[in-house]
Length: 270
Image (cartoon, rainbow, N blue to C red; front, top):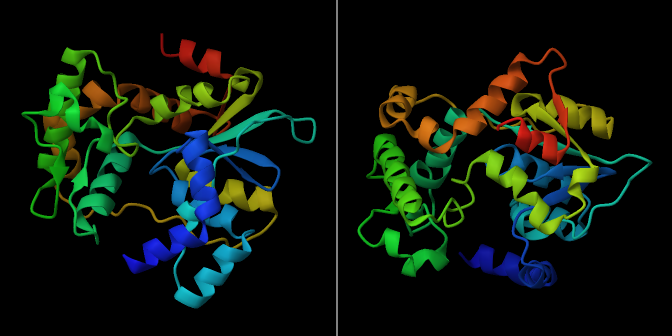
């Protein structure tokens, strides 16, 4: 906890910038390339790579053996043409793997004293939440976790809330992509290049012209009910159907990627 407070003080300028810009997640920049920051789809790996340019980050990593990449990296405020190109890379993970990855990191391996909440802190007064379980800890199973999301999603549908009150790690990858337009109104001028997250290291190594970058931490299938729990709760159909369609398109693409602008991306799901 003391480390977290220290990191916030050291990166106070960036914290204030994020507060005033009101952009929690968006687009980050690595060298001369824009990359969409999608939680639990290579986000930490990308931020670690981007943060290596920060002297403060490198010093803290050396002195404390910690990697405060979330403190040191802020989304870009505007996007503009770079080297005569307008492109944004987007890495997408299987919705099943992504969902279990959230449970594994935020619940099973949670080192904080507080439970993990499915919702943003501001949702304390949202009517649909009152009778529902929204916080989970190590005593809960993955089935409990999926059931909690399903119940909450159904309540939000009933109240016409959409997904806006969910924690960012629960929000579908599709929503994170279309929400980029709120902060980057000129995004439709750009090519969105989608890759499966399994290709992240190869793409970034080619981008940086470097080899042997830190390997991405893939989720281990350590729970024998991993897919069974997902199937039984029908959570993909209810919450992540568009993520599933997008991921299937990606892994079946002969080019190993998809290129679309934002409008055509949205229309492809109509």
